[in-house]
Length: 71
Image (cartoon, rainbow, N blue to C red; front, side, top):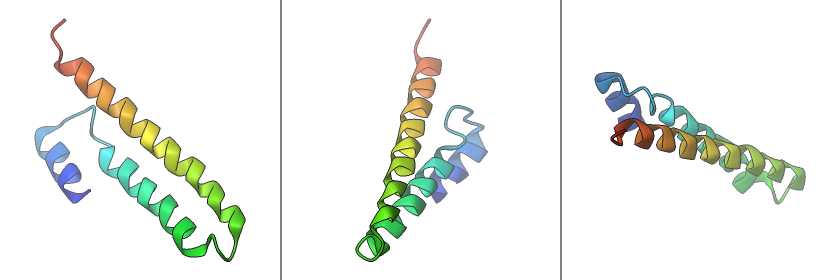
């Protein structure tokens, strides 16, 4: 996560600028599920948000590929 943040700031990589945030959100939504789903099962709903963070990562990757491919 730190490497993504540093490198996109250095290279001004627009399509991947927010990759660090998407990966961080993914971990942030997953951790409470792992720790507390046995005590409070509805917290498992955070997995939906984790999945959306992954979808965002895929979209950013596709945008980056589109910019690097020849027209």
